[in-house]
Amino acid sequence: MREIKASVIADAVEKLCLDAGYYLPEDVKQALAEGRDREVSPTGQYVLQQCCENYEVAAAEQMPLCQDTGTALFIIEMGQELVITGGGFEDAINEGVARGYINGYLRKSMVAEPIFDRTNTKDNTPAVIHYEIKPGDGLKITLLPKGGGAENCSAVKMLRPADGLQGVMDFVVETVKNAGGKCCPPGVVGVGVGGTSDYAAYLSKKALNRKIGEHNPNPNYAKMEEDLLERINNLGIGPQGLGGVVSALAVNVEYFPCHIASLPVFVTMNCHSQRHSSVEL
Amino acid sequence: MADIIKLQTPLKDEDVMKLHAGDVVSISGIIYTGRDAAHKRLVECLERGEKLPVELAGQIIYYVGPSPAKPGQPIGSCGPTSSYRMDPYTPAMLEQGMKGIIGKGPRNADVMAALKKHKAVYMAAIGGAAAVIAKAVKTCEVIAYEDLGPEAIHKLEVEDLICFVACDASGGNIYETGKLPYIKD
Image 1 (cartoon, one colour):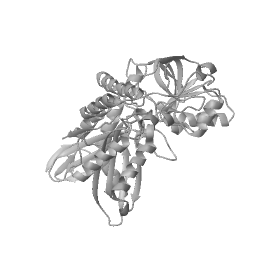
Image 2 (cartoon, rainbow over the protein chains, first blue to last red):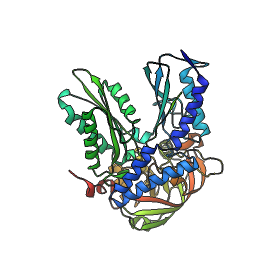
Image 3 (cartoon, rainbow over the protein chains, first blue to last red):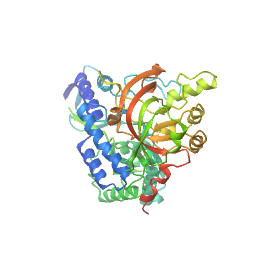
Image 4 (cartoon, rainbow over the protein chains, first blue to last red):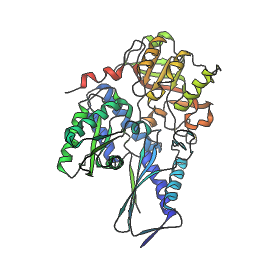
């Protein structure tokens, strides 16, 4: 059994919050620059140029890429032979989030309770945490800061198996069309297919963590990703919904086996501030 | 891109009426921030028949919840938030003589009608270009609802804040027409 101190985890999470908040991953920067060069709408070109300048300014001045530094959404891949010492695991995650968001001048966007008491918790906790237990003794922590504007455009549909590929594709395109300019396009569209409604939602979040340009290893799904991107870019939405040919940077689809009666589809919309950051401890 | 039209706040009817959906504007002067929680309080304030903490005649409200300012900076990153969430409150604000709104994303039919009725304009700043937008903000002070943190009403002095005219006072709407030349079946 390998031991890891809770304080080591909190320190690593604090740093992850800053990394994700200030620095856009290389693949996203490249996709935005390519989008700017491919865009034909003058307004769209200007918007994408501003997005490129924004990631330069944010990194140079260590400022948040976007004022909405999101819900701190974590995917934890933890080896079953790992032991956490000196404190609780979730306490460590939340301590790291609080320190990162306070010390890093990131915006605190969480309210204590959704309906009756929308008081800000003032340190952006609690985090939303998903777990995958793996063989071995490794620990990989991934943070996806999830902005509210794009997240509000996410949608689920429980299709009939008879709806098949066409049904799934139509629902994804319809969701992107409904989101229009609200989700700060062009971003990455995360799609989860299969499992149960909740698991499809998780898969669609996990899909956002895949690099732009990498496709699902299953060739059927890889083809679906390409076809979806083409259909989305043909909607005319364009950067910020002001019109253009670059309406998304990528469509990433993840799937899981499902019930004979079901075909769940969850679409998670993300903005052009396609932030994600990981650390292995 | 089209020529940039300079706007100085507060806005007058003639400033607004010359603007058309798709125009690019550069805004300088004083603007006020307000988003979900502040709008709820402003409308409750009007319902109680009380005076608003800010005189809205001729003014612009910017839908933003800035990230905290680092020492020595007036403000943190401060891009627009999605405007549709303010749709239920906006006609009441326009009723007070507010002339401009800055946000992002489409508005509903009630807001479009109220813009027309009150000769006001809705402009879109670039969502997610928040670090760049912060450069246009010269000063920032909280003037109401401080307990709301990022949702408090801030008074901002801006210089050359670039926005697109999204919905004009004649019914023009970039979110309807902007995509038309680029739709491929």
